[in-house]
Amino acid sequence: MKRLLSLSLVVVLVLSLVGCGGEQQDELVIYSGRSKALVDSLVQQYRQQTDVPVRVRYGTDSQLLAALQEEGDQSPADVFWANTTGALGNAVNNGLLTELPDTLADRATRFTPSNQRWTPVTTRFRVLAYNSDTVSPEDLPDSVLDLPEHDEFEGRIGWTPAYSSFQDFTTALRVTEGEETARTWLTNMQELDPNSYTSNTPMVQALEAGEIDVALTNHYYVLRLKHGGAEGEYEEEEHEEEEHEEEEEAAARASAPVETYHFAERDLGNLALVTGAGALQTSNQPDAANRFLRYLLSEKAQSFAADRVNEYPVVAGTPVPGYMTPAEEALQLSPEFELQRLQEMDPTLELLRDVGAL
Image (cartoon, rainbow, N blue to C red):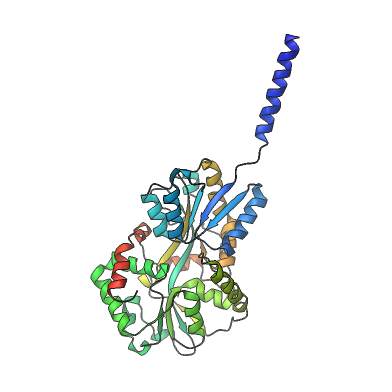
């Protein structure tokens, strides 16, 4: 009898262990400052590939950082996927991100931070867009710093001082050239009576309509207008619905008179801006978080981002659509800059307010 009882206990234990091994993984929770148009599709592909349940909370980078701080150790989030390097730097400074293993940190071939607390996912580039019906590229300056000298653009230039990518550019200008140079540039730009836009999409549409001649923007807004694609940055729900309608129209406007101008090689006007993601310290499943990060750096995910939102891969050798400037050529144009310094945003905002740009 004792032998039968012992055998029964062994069988129960074995079945219990088998059952545990077959349990579905806990839900992976992602806090995303990137758009639904990009993230939902990638998450769906990941679910199909791994059978892992995933839930995404969307918000702006600042909204999500505030939520993480408020939730503290009780946060359900496993991954923070940010739209800006500055937000990732703030997350590091506040002890929110864990160090990534070398095998993951080494996956991206450029822009990986030395602290290994996050990995780059895609790259965008600052450019000067222009209306090709009214402007010849030969007449444009070699440097963005010389743009205020072109008084022929008075009242005919667009910028987005309230938008994160413009603020990143201004931060890089302030850090590399000094605050006085940045102040002078902004003040001189103000004398051109620039048209301010809340976001880049309406600005590029105004450029197409001939309402302005040139505009400081990111490369993918021009590509989106001419070749289709989605917005990569999260925006409020009601605005996303409007953006979706605009995406459908964009696919039919390949002949729009809007082109991209690159300043001279290594000029700050060609600055590379990086999106990225990291695993959160409070996650109780760090391996699962790292597996998702590794997926974002897979060729499939990197190619999808290039096709969907016209952003550049960070993994060498990943193909991009033929209408995009080759990745190595675009990178050669960008200046060297320590991207982690983009978290130094407060002095930039103060400067923009002081000169009346905000």
